[in-house]
Length: 286
Length: 255
Image 1 (cartoon, chains in turn cyan, red):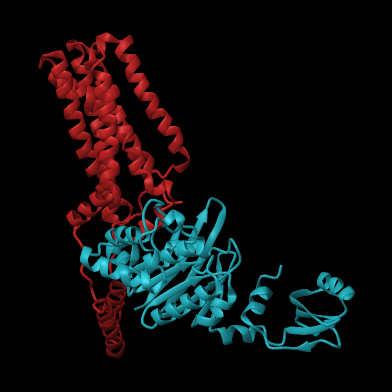
Image 2 (image 1 turned 90 degrees about the vertical axis):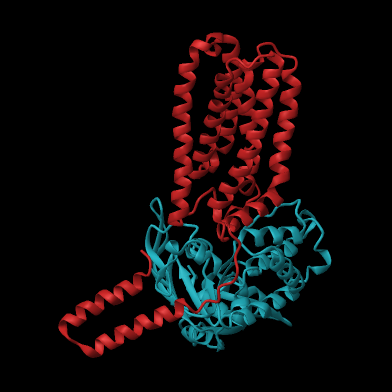
């Protein structure tokens, strides 16, 4: 399976939300990283064929996805960033409703809904109304609905928002398994989630795809540009104004600054191993 | 264009063939075979047809659709019993039936479910279509009951054809407006249009009082012309829904 994005562009009036993005996605887990307004959600919506691009096309194994219609949507699972729910439905009713819209026969849907409710750890509250659910529980219902039709392409926009650390780990394991023979595209601001599970990272900036590579390939770009420097609390504020500080932690009387800089910022600064978060912060520094 | 990549390969193949490059031809043929193999690779799971889908929508949306219509019918029947010239007010009542469809048609937009539903197999088009069929059936039952009641109250079947037009014209006006609103995705105008349509009920009511000639037998021509015009608008909206479904274009208000 190959999802090919060919010069995909979206304009909203004069604003360019996605600017001529071209890439090819094969089965695996892709993490989409970018600051707010970078065009991640717009790109994902166009991949789902719910937003018409200004220009460019998306092909699935050579077939244009908008022309595939229901055949494409059959292969698709999508979790929007900000999704709603019918408050009077229970979790089970909601998933059965979504299964009906996905064209899953009733007996299969019942089985699948039961399985998924267990997978997302909502089996014990399946008959409770969605309006009584917490944000994390609703998010898990959203994840379950995206998986209902065994999608070959799974697009998740900020899926871990609102999940507690235990749920996030559970989700990461579930999606990791899932991405074996499918295309999974995941957008999140939680860099550690992407670092943990993404096979490849797509870095977006101002509508453009600026980098693509594995986590180790990308972090190499920041190698030699991350420094740690121990300073006094009084000096810490001065350093924060002078250079880009990725992190700041207190150790006894001292403050350890994690500085992003092309050159050694001070004699006492020690070069340290770069992480994806460092690269992210460095890419979106200004 | 379907299978565009294959077409590109084939075009390229023909061009290369003219130049007589057998190696290139083999490469291109292998490319074509690989694409076709990948396309046939997906395990197709069983999916329901439209009628099964319609029955599922009936299961989930039916109580709301039929409940609202029954509620409006109850109020209308109560009111009709106390009115003089009740046939002049049929247009007000049928506008109310059309208005009662709005909450069901726009439910997914109200609850921000539009985006999630649009990505399903049914997509926005089939969901609206199914709701329209069910709401249309409920409307048909209610309008028939209303007409029977009016005829019973008048103890006459005279002007039955004209009374049907009194019912259908305002109904078509409202439904065409709702479908146009959804097609053009004017989310910000939903409230404005709802007020306008509610206002149209008042307008029909005023016309019943202020323009009694409009409800005389001699005005049948006007009603027929209005019916043809608004049936054409309604038909056009239905055709556009069908067209969007065929072309796979997104339909409906998505946040």
